[in-house]
Image (cartoon, rainbow, N blue to C red):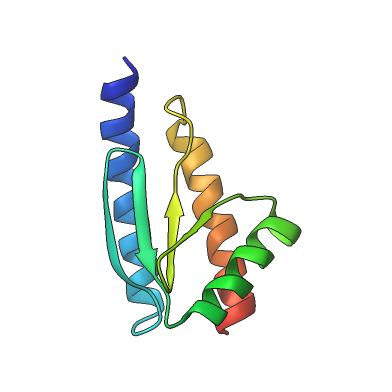
Length: 100
């Protein structure tokens, strides 16, 4: 049931990232994805680099850079809602540190 899980948890992640975009208007945008292949944009590459570094070093969350200013999330297909929520909370903490 990996495909079913990816659909459900991916939809949950997109919803939570949409909430982050509302919390940080003009700083997080273009939240997009299908299943667990998810991405969003930050204002510029320097901000993205700082957020990625903060996520990894301080909050132990790995993500990928994409293009000039995007972050991609590619979690395991077995990711559950609780793990996804923990990841979003850690991402938010990194965003607060970097974006204020």
